[in-house]
Length: 500
Image (spheres, rainbow, N blue to C red):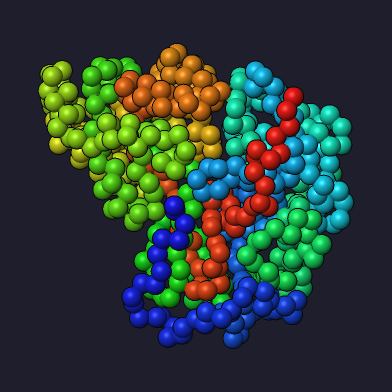
């Protein structure tokens, strides 16, 4: 659906070179040049970028280049494709209690890259470590306990019923004894290692599952780059095979281009103490004021998805029919402002000015609201000043951004103590429906209708990463969220479910 979205830009090549389509990934050899050392780069050799100044640990790494490598080194209990469909990976059997609060997972007969067997103790320790903060912080907020029953089974107890817990368990599993290591071992097809010429990925010949990965290189040299300009220079001049960025770049050259949703959710949040948005008629009509498609096209060059409902449009339970009811119709918002005699009323749209892209989006939204009769001010707030204004509700609207969990859990917005509950968003009905949706997927549409009718939260878009790759090197690339090198082992959830 969102995979391979563009081919060649019909532009003159900067380098004057063309790519052969005869390459099969696997040309790298242990004698390949290290980072930045190639005098005559072979663009048929598979080379990937990395940031040596940033973390490579799967729970703390934030650099996009480094995270791209992680799906080649680590695996989770499950894997999730671009359409949020779950399939087994390190789990070969599971049970769910009748009340959906206790889940048991049987660990597959897998091994780490050093040959040691994977155990339930490794899995339990890994999941607990991922709860402590970092990249997966907040994802497992509804988990009470994680325990290894024995060497083969892990039991997870929840504080609410949840029928889609495996959707959250694509978290990389690492060795229990290496939780604090800078680069712990994983069970994936490659190992990250240092050599005299720099870092590289080395293929594990005895990889436990031998899944159809689509990449067979014995060695993948890694080229160091920090800034986006450095990465492009590596791509153009040093033979680096791929560049990933969180925004489209008008790059001139011969390449293939893919999209990978990253889960970043852009939204407007109302302050219920606002003289404008305390009125339900006005805030529930706010959704009609926002031209989401124009924002996606202008600011994200298509590398985002307009979303009218509070979920990714790729999520299986996103209703396009329901979404159409709350789409762009500016006259409806203007009418609501007029009905409440609010024309000419001044409002504050808060945005973090440390984020230039989000500021530009906020300026366009301000123009949309101005067209409806409001007078919009965007204050000079950044850093600590922005956080204080957010905490103390010094706004009428805030343009926020957060990373949605893969199960589109919204409790952080509407629970009384929710981490994203700014502007008194507490909504008992919506919070209850959040929990009901997690327990029964059929309730997502009811939840989304409740959120949109109340209007405290106004969804705008979900962002994506852009993946630029040399033509012919990645013919089978099917990137998914947080897993550019997505693959599965061919099993289904139905095949591994064990009746109680």
